[in-house]
Length: 336
Image (cartoon, rainbow, N blue to C red):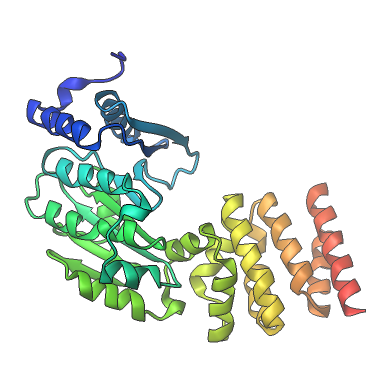
């Protein structure tokens, strides 16, 4: 047994639950991802995942290290369900059930009205569920919501232990659990009505989509759909802007692809984009500045040339100078 696994943290009853789970899934290969960060609770979540893998060898652990200090450590099941929690006690049973659901082949899944409705979604939804391990009602809400993560590829669910991450719970105004947030615009305390949540997801104004929901769409390769929604609304969604200047390159890349498609469909929207970039540009890191100069080259006009020319007169790095010159050349070529 690996020395770093502290088995006594699990009760005999919890170990028996996991042993029963092991027999239920047989040799079905289930993969979970352990997202490890610099957060103080990261080791506890990692230890739980490694212990689970030791008890159930058919559970495959993939470890993902993140240097983003804003990201919480997590146990990720499938692509859309993540636990910012150590799901022991009352939360172990719904956690194991979710793992079992993730291991069911798509062709063997039962098609229901819910799955049909969610599979038809064209915009992502982010659900944050705050729990506490000693809360007797929280497992009921977890079990009610987690099937959504496997019914529609655009649904992202985060189960967050409010006692493990009290700062986040305080920032979100959590006073009791369970508390459920949908796109940070709708919230429920206590039991949830699944049909009501699905109905709200179906009828949301896409301009009100959260940053996380838009990021989910970009990660799913739906940049063109994000662009189409903004063109239809006639303005760039406020939460989209944060993704365009995100420090993580893969996030920016998806947003930049959406911008290129948006410009192709309606170049007039570029005016809104440029104003935002001009205001934020001074505080951006050089890699982000370089990408934004590329975008300004694709969208820019005479006024943009003046802005970039002023930038070249400042004390900027050679990388930014090169990106700025390329943007100028792109604009001049298009205008000519």
